Image 1 (cartoon, each protein chain N blue to C red):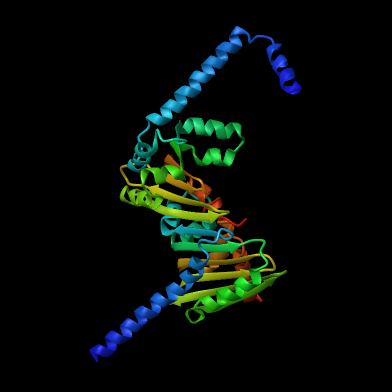
Image 2 (cartoon, rainbow over the protein chains, first blue to last red):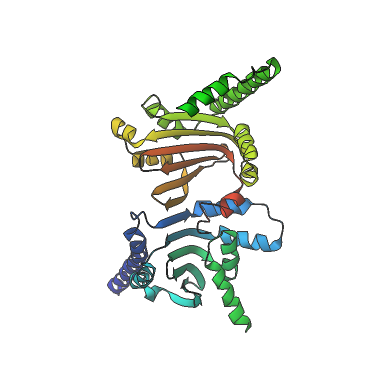
Length: 174
Length: 183
């Protein structure tokens, strides 16, 4: 019985490591490619916003949501003929079993796909994959994520694409 | 060549600066020199001292420091109001520009220096790689010490290290790079 439990625990641990590696694999594959833009933001940066003075309760909610984030990674390429290819490659490398599709949006010539990872009833990761005719971007936001605040948070942080999540509210209202 | 001669003549034919204007220039130059000197008088992090000790005096290494007041004055004159307001509580900014060859000559690496930063209590805030440039932002903060930011810009032929002592408005960081990047 003990052996079964140990093996099961090991399998869960190994699976977790592989899942993380698969996402990192996509980022690390292009980390030395200068034609890509890469942004990495640590939890330390997000923790700076906890003591910020705000005027409205709405801003306070956004800042609280930001302070619960653990990290942000963005990999993007602009003005490229490979955008569609990269979009497809992202889906091939990202462990889709780990994620649940939240929403797909087609805006003009751009496709947005939002995926979430849930653990313990909370969203621990939000992935946004964007592919257009000329542009490609993959964004991974992790920590404790409040979906209601993400689109506002995107506005505050000027991270383009996250405003698409407003459509999630519109869908719910309709 | 004619233009050069003409401009030289034009320069020579300029009326001589009057004594009050000359005095103003001297006062202004002294004021600026004092401000720059006051910047270098502020306490430095051990990491910055390590870089300075290792590379100052090497060929093409440039080092300078300015006070927060001087930096704000320059930003005010450049009409960079948002940036000016964000560094209202910055005490000093110091820079060192080191050619990559100097690292080779000293037989040290930038990755080695990043370990020095971590030992010195600096934590990575963010990293941005764009158009071949690699910029990493660090923060050293403790209840006793005032905040210190350290920025390393890795370019193809040189490394720029910048230490900012004092408080930077987080909202400025939130709404500008490095957090925001694609708008």
